[in-house]
Amino acid sequence: MKRLMLVIGLAITACAILVPSLASAADPPKKLDVMLYVDTVNGSRPVGAKPRPVGCTQTNVYVRGEQQVFRVWGSVAGSGDILSTENVAYAYVTVPGTPNLKLNWGSHGSATNKVYFWTAAWILPADYPLGEATAKVVFKTEDGSFGTYEYKFTVVPQLKTAAKKSTTVKSR
Image (cartoon, rainbow, N blue to C red; front, side, top):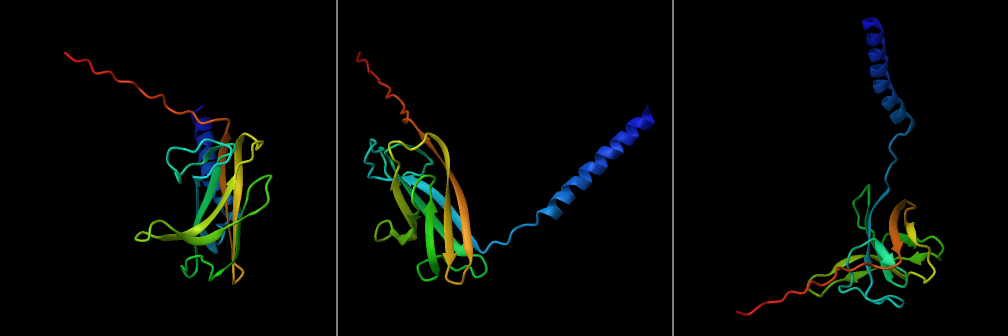
């Protein structure tokens, strides 16, 4: 019995060592030409939904009729150059069921605190499917390098807001 347990233990150990090394040999890491950071914020101009109390709040949960703004920052992996109109051939976001959204490069923020990044805004249609969706961000640089990023977001029927608590102060 001890011998059988020893053989089983050795077999399990060999599998634990061998299987991960085979998997890593089959899927070597992919070379990154372009590195991207992607997020979304709620826009301040929804046409079919009530505006949120604070515009440009980072989120990935939206209701139909809200404005979703994709924000993207990126750089060229080899050189570290920032992706801008000087080195990008095209940039867009693909959202399931809609035409491609062109990403635009520009400054954002106040005059004393400007930041440059790529944006694309769209209004979620009134009949957009509820649930999770995946948008794909695509960049092609002037030298032919590509960068892509898949971004998940969720469409819900309506946002729940916390009820305001009423406080009453009793005077003595």
